[in-house]
Image (cartoon, rainbow, N blue to C red; front, side):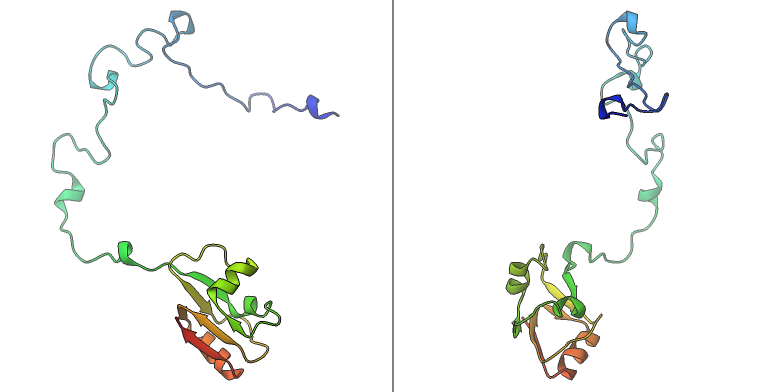
Length: 147
C-alpha cells in the first residue's frame, strides 16, 4: 500500500449543499428558502429565546445576586513537585520559572500548590500560595513570600 492509494471509506465523506448555483443544481433560484417571507431574507431569523413577541423567560424571571466573573483572578498554577525540578536555584520567582519554560502563560499571577515535596530550603516568591504549600516550604526551612 502506498500513501497515494489511501482514501476515505465509501460514504464517509459528504459534499456540502451548494445553494444558489443555477437551476441545474436543484438548489438554484430561491436557494432552498421557498418564496418570500421572513425566513427567505438574509438575516431573517429571530434570535435565541424569542417567543413570538411574548415576554421571554429570561426577562420574566427575577435577577438576583452578583457575579464575580469579570473581576476574578486567574492564576497560573504550579505544584511543589514541579519546583523540585529546579536544580541549583535558591530563589524561585515567576521570571525564573518563565525563563526555564516551566510556566508559559503567567495570566494574573502565579499560585503555588502543595502537591509533592520540597527537597531542601527554598525561597519561593509568588502571587499566591495554598496553605499546604506554605506548610511544606516552611517545614523544609524555606520561605514563602507573597509578591
